[in-house]
Image (cartoon, rainbow, N blue to C red):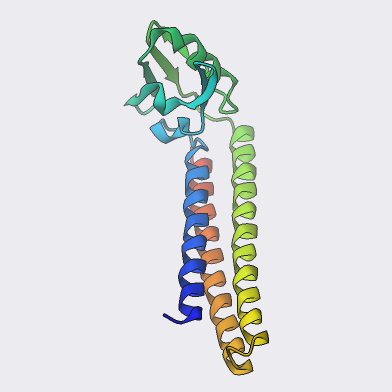
Length: 187
């Protein structure tokens, strides 16, 4: 395998991970309907350390406007309820022993616009990450040229290819944002 093949593999893998990360970030933005991934980013104070909600209970979706969390250890129910209430998701959980019900209120127009702005921030962070990955790959190509491992023509060809991957990844980011905006803004 040539050095360029390893750069290609590494670069494309990193770009794909950036896109997956964006998808995960978008999963935490609620769009008016209940879905379990909404609570993925919630951390609960459990046994002295911050633990993901999924490790202290089971999240389920009984209907389109409700989530429920079945806490495994009753002593953690209050901490789970507190973590949900203090999250920036605007939720108001109601505890019933080990079962916590979370009604998903409809989003106001103002809150929808706020969520679109947050989605835009996530998108911009992802684009910056992708451009940094491109820069690193181009630096490796530049080093190969400097060390006389490749010709100037090969350097240009490789840089053009890296730019094409970057453009493709940025296009996917924009498509994800567009889709998420539609999801958030539909009433």
